[in-house]
Structures are given as structure tokens and as C-alpha cells.
Image (cartoon, rainbow, N blue to C red; front, side, top):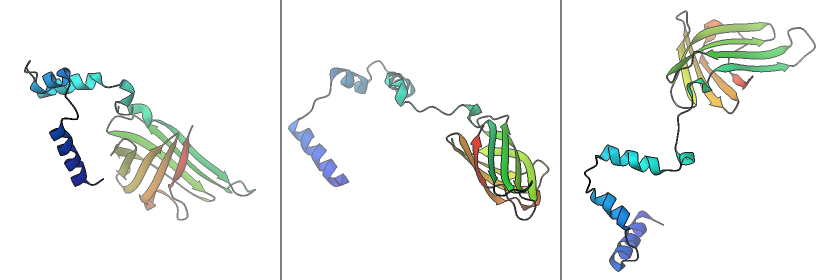
Length: 167
């Protein structure tokens, strides 16, 4: 149904009086008690079913230890591993410590990531001041890391990207 069809339908329903407004709804609309708009909004919010209300995730939803490990050979260094430890999470940021190993190549970095939405965060530089752009996405019991630019922190042949399982 197009918007014009909906408007036409509602106009016809109004002109034919197919519906009526309840007395409670009419009283709320007239606002005879002169309750402020904010007060009326809060009263309406209290009437909502609690299970339908959106709530922000807790600050500690990011915190934890995340790991990825894959052994691809029989040698002592024939594995891929990613470790992330998130601590000191607030509603705006968290501290992160990352390590990566791909065979003989490895690297590590520490920094502070800024939370940009309920499930995403970004880190622009490491604690030692070097450019290190990493994007984080919080998945169910996992953390997805995308390395945009953090070459100084690891050997050639490895990176920090991956999906790490929460421990």
C-alpha cells in the first residue's frame, strides 16, 4: 500500500466514523491536568511492557578474554593464534591488549578503543602513540577484529584480524 492510499483510507474512515477514541485517550490528548510533555512521555513509558523496552548493554558486556587458535601442522610454531583481553570497560571506551601469532610471525599491541555503538568500537592509536586503526564488533560470545592499519605492531606475514571466541 502506498502512502497516498493509506492517507486516503484513513481519511475515509474518519469521515465515516468507523472508529472512536476512548475516554481515557481523549483525556490524555486534552491534557486537562497540564502535565508537561516530558511527564506525559514518562507516564507512557511506564505503561510499556518491560520486555519490549530497549535497554543499553551493560558496561561490562565488552570485558573478557577472547581467543582464536588453529593448529595447521606438526611443528612447534605451526599454528595461528589471536588473543584479546578487554578491561576497564565504560559506556564510552575500554582498554584492549592484543597478541597475534602466525607461525614464526607475531605481534602485540595495547590501546584504548572508543565505543561507537552498542556493538561496535574503534581504536585509532596504541598506548605508545603509534597509529593503529582496529575495528571491533561484538558478536554473541565472540569478538570480530578488523585491522585497518597497524603494521608497526607486528611482523610482516601476520595481522590482528579475526573472530575470537569469548572464554
